Image (cartoon, rainbow, N blue to C red; front, side):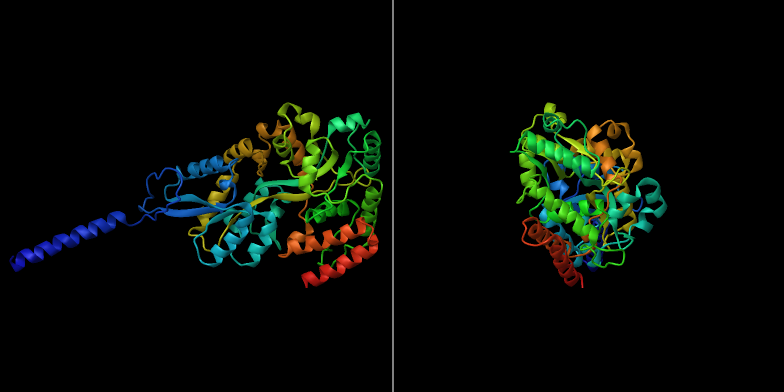
Length: 438
């Protein structure tokens, strides 16, 4: 082979390699991509992004989650999303490990009780300037927006929001001669007395008296009596006069046989499904849980109704603890602007109504809430009335919220069992809480 032929061959080989490299550049691939690839952006480049959480792992919601991603990907070929998920109880740990380890994460579904821990880990973006503060104020109610805030910063955008509210069994109330759903504490006590007299084997009110849920159920009644766990300056005030009044009232309910000890949310649900409980506290999912526990759909309206929490005097604001999921964006997102747009896509009316149809969880935007489909669903509409005046659990402001809830629960149980007076129990709770937050 001549030198001229050798040089020509090398030039052709280099040209082929260059053309091959160009044809494969500009598109980042992902094994977990979802939806049609479509055409790439005007620059021929596609950014592969990640949405993480737990709902895409659950049988009840994985198909609608995939559909929401597909809808986005079909219209945004320059920035496509894929799903990465874990079971609910592993999600927070995975999000912290992966985001702090530099792994690519863009958007995530987060339980509101985790938000403080993620914010303190320094891995989240403030979404107010990304999504638009004016847009948030115009489209989402203030109570819902607060579920995504930590120290005034909007780290999370509400995706679905409700409250831990009260439900009652209309059939049991009718049998006991309770003709009206109680609206005041006095009416509530009278209803509980009638239920207990009609059937001593029934638990009139299945307050959570076992486990961490005890603290949140207590907070709702504490607020009802005008008390709080922490004041506006962060001082512990759970042992105030209002706190003692609340706990003494609950102890009286135990002594009268209206409340049972050793009751957790799971036990309350099981007993409610078999007509052994007249009132209890739960999330908006309570109706679906009742059906899954064997109650026929045709009988649900006779067995369960949402209700506003009774108040001390007529005209007071009914209280409830907020419950829900928010959407966050990470500091290591490959495209913060697109992450914000994707979040708006997920909470938008079209996608939110698909999620509502499939899972039954309410939307958060005003337009979706006012949609005829939501408004005509009596269960959801009434639960949104409960949520309208809800507020975050006070412990949620602290990264060690589970520890704080545990302290409150332990001291409440001691008082309800008669091992301590209400004042002593709450004094001890206050001392322990102060040590835990300082």
